[in-house]
Length: 306
Image (cartoon, rainbow, N blue to C red; front, side, top):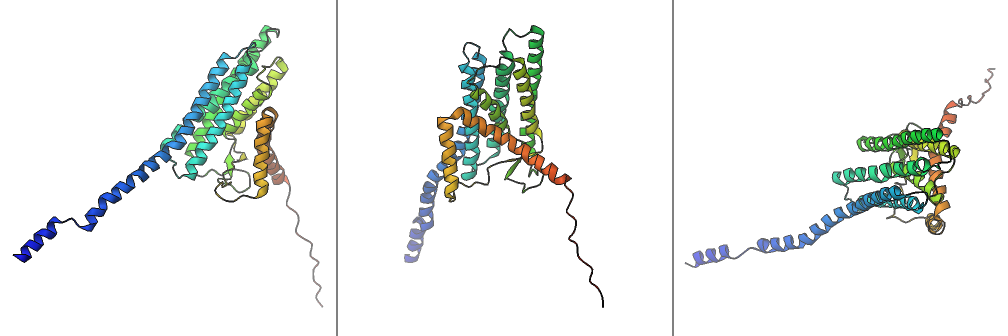
């Protein structure tokens, strides 16, 4: 009897393991919700990127010779889209929350903010709003050529994104240390940044001469070519913000931030042009280095035998 009662009591009483399991599950729930929230955080910045691109398109549509500030606002919106695009990727890498959905959403956002928006802005600012004082036939030809150049810019940006998405480990064709340190071709946010920086530097005032319009056409084509080229551009991905940085790097970031805050027009223009020129200079350096013949071996006098 005693043994049977003891066995029944022991079977009815819950074990320590069964008591701890619900507590563990309850303690894991907040952590799981926090983990899901971390996945949403990069997507929020990507959504802000899309919103900035859409706002830039709306401002460009409303731009006119009498209200050129709309074009300046469109350029500023593209600049903010560049900032949001850099933050969503950086946050995803720092929190280890990168996902296939996030990468696809980011690519679609880039097409809107850095493809459609700057292409429309470049066409409206540089070609569509040319003054009527220019000869009608010449103005029409420049506008048509400008539309082709801006469409080429859009296609180059979309092709750049497609190549970036399918590339496992892109290797630049020119020498250096390839990998995450360099992009193969100028990234599409930088290409859009060049367009926006030029418009912002001009206070949104459209071009008034067919000569400057042709120069703008060539610049749009060059930017589009750099995006689909195999030339290397620095990616800034080797900078780890979680580690300690030298004092000089902190001072440099402070100076750049203060320059953009107080002198946004010349500062952003110089930064955009210098970044575009960096890839060109690296390419030229590689071309000249490749054409330079190797140095002859050092002369050694033959040893004389006794």
